[in-house]
Length: 257
Image (tube, rainbow, N blue to C red; front, side, top):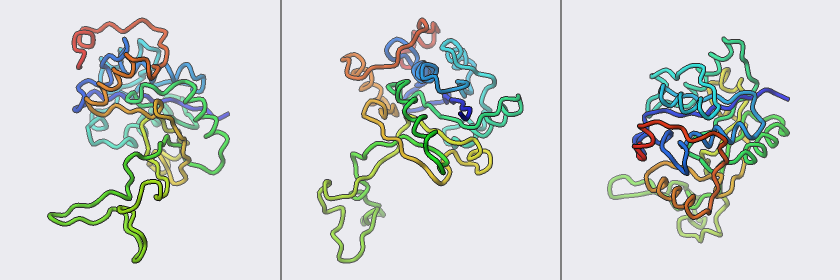
């Protein structure tokens, strides 16, 4: 079997939900659930947290992830593309004698992704030939056929149809072709795709269909509040975490950061 490393990216500069990756949900910092699911899956040869923060590194190590180096500041801005830190991490690991055939990105913002989710995705990826990567997707709730580009006081459909064809923006949703949107649950790719092609996806991308819980992504305060409600009501289950909660005054007292 090919070797595979899990990357848990945890940049410290979140703006929409301050200190999001270290904020406590269900008794543990958010990143704990990605690390725990990765370790429990039995898929990975290593679980590594990519962070620019010494504090976040301490959290990650507490829950069993490695942090062999910090992410360079230039790869940790709000506009930094993933390929920058992925390429940097793979090259640093390779230089240390740790080359991996594949990598997976498990973002802390999808806390309900489970070890079983990861195992299913890895089995699908490993069984498929001729692909560069696998990416988690879910069926759209807002169809792009009903989206518009606005320019001043005029707008045009995002997706144009041929003349005489029934416009998608004036059609029932059930009449439109199924479309899917990526979510933050997981990605898996061959390392050569990143190192040779400088992309985390490549050209031939395989879909991995997630359910509502697996694909849930925390991007803003509304998402955070909803996640807390889902946990409190027992509607979605967080991965089990074996470690005692990480104690950090900034985390325990902040609750928002």
